[in-house]
Length: 127
Image 1: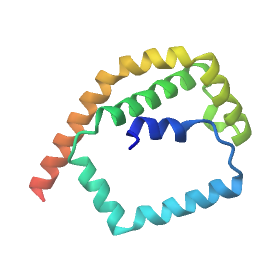
Image 2: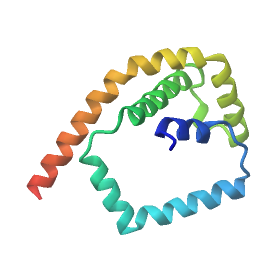
Image 3: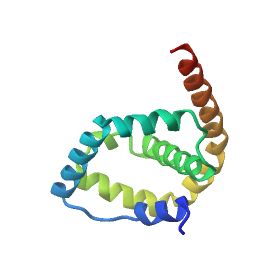
Image 4: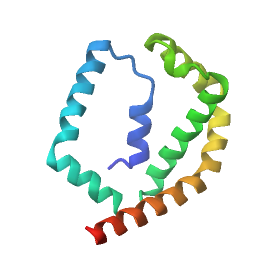
């Protein structure tokens, strides 16, 4: 059985998908987010601290976002093809930097996870 990180690495590899596929995926996720089962799953996940693998993924996303904000401040305003190109460039040019920042951000993510769980458990007690 594959671990979460192995599965995530496979999924996060650069894949070209068409606009139609991307739109279809978005519509599916929008519908799924409204379902009671999904809402319950999200609610339960807030009560638990994320696994170290998931924490590492969150830290990596924070690191990538830091690099994008620093070197490409207008990233969000760009069109999809430009963003895809920049993502490829960032992966090649700043991959090492992102890896180091990921390790640095692990502490922040762990702290945020603990705060998230504490807040969710307090909210559950009050309700």
